[in-house]
Image (cartoon, rainbow, N blue to C red; front, side):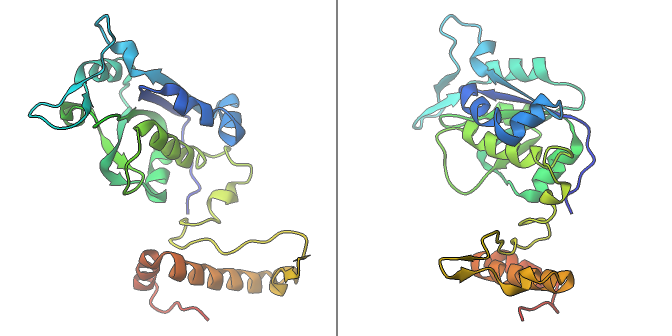
Length: 243
């Protein structure tokens, strides 16, 4: 269950492209949460911590190799300026732990302060990882042009679990991954559309029967779409089966 009691969460994002982070987080639910003071997001350009006249943030790889690597100097300066005692520094990188709902809940529940560092080019100098980073995160087994895009995914998933951000607190409980299964199919009006009818059981008001139906459909959907989750579920619930 992912109903959380957490302090206000402040997130500082370090990127070469802060506008890519700011734009999608300024509207809709998260924009309203920021306006209400439930969440503070500050997007910074790593170049602001450079000291040379060219504002250089990258250089060639030591030992050879393709591409460019983000230099340690501006990243160290930025983190050291922004970091507080309770800060957790997260690096978005394909080499990180795979981000999931449990990690989103963990980050949301901790409250406090996150610094999210967005890699670019071939990533960051590994001394950044060794000395500054508390957690390396990946949003999946694929490569993006830069970590700013991935950071938006993480911020959205974490922020929506903060109490008060969603209109109905049950929204973060009755959904996919909240209990290890995918969410059951959902329907709305009209009851019949182009000859396709809403399942009759959802219209009868028998809530125990409806919950049983939803659970069965959740099991079925998980088995078909995410057999990895299905196997984990059967290991922990050996008596559960699709009727």
